[in-house]
Image 1: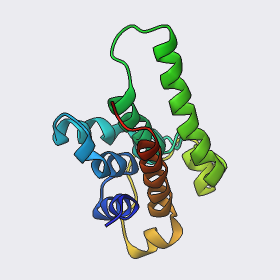
Image 2: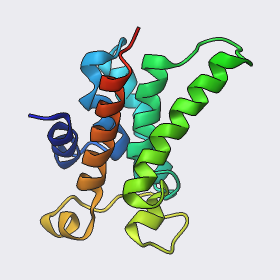
Image 3: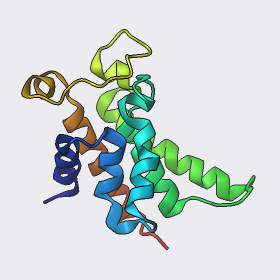
Amino acid sequence: MTRREQAMAHFKEGYNCSQSIMLTFMDLLPGDQKNLMSLASSFGGGMGRLREVCGSVTGMFMVAGILYGYDGPETGEVKAAHYARIQELAHKFEEKHGTIVCREMLGLNVKHDVATPEARTQEYYKKRPCAEIIGDAAEILEQYINEHPVA
């Protein structure tokens, strides 16, 4: 199964968009799955269903941070290089979807959605392109990792 397919399958199992990305790349990440899934749990639905930055994008950013990020009070080139990496990932996602903002991709005019997610029914999956969006994020991140092996 490709990482794209894995990410989409995780979403269809009930994981949120951010968790789906993190779980798809878990084999590359140090740390314990429970803590990483708990961390990612806050970012589904565009950050707690606020419909801001798409959870699959924040998932990409978190994986990139774990793999390539810095861990000190960096202010120089290390920080700039990492921010450039994050912007590159965002740009690749925007090329495909026109935005990294959840509500814009879903065509919603509500900025802060209700906290309770919709039930994951067949009707839900028909009206929401989230699984495909998550698959795209997984492909973008996988391509980036393949082109920039972790040191």
